[in-house]
Amino acid sequence: MNEKVIVNGSKGFLAMCGAIFSFITNSVTELVIILAILMVGDYLTGVIASYVEQEIDSSKSLGKLNFKRGLTGVFKKVGYLILVGLAILLDYIVYYIGATAAGIDLGFKGIFTLIVTCWLIGTEAISLIENLGRIGVPIPGFLKKAFIKLKDTVEKVGEEG
Image (cartoon, rainbow, N blue to C red; front, side):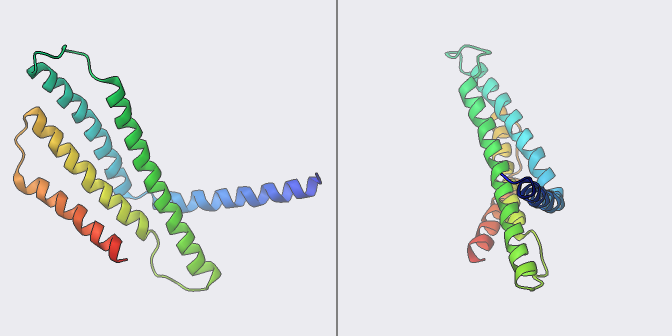
């Protein structure tokens, strides 16, 4: 293969990766950080709740948490991050097509990332609250309702476009 073609192709690929990285770093907002914190909290409270429930149920052997179930939880969290990544890429494509190719200033950047992240925040917060309830922590009813409302509202916004 011609060295010039390889060099030019590499430059184009690196430029594309740089552009995507630049866009993504601007897309990692406080909401994504909140989501990450909730994901860790949900996982930890899920493990604690499983342990507490084993202690209550004397038929289960104490201290043996289900490894497969825990690993499935980790994979689920990785899936959430991939979902946010897909939303970031969709935002990039929409912004690039609208602003660059069509010459239209859309006036926003990151709407899909915002919607997906807020929906996942609602999902994780609801699960965390349920785990706390399984542990025996008293939960104010309005708190879970507020996160259900957040999730439902974001779902409607996403569906209506």
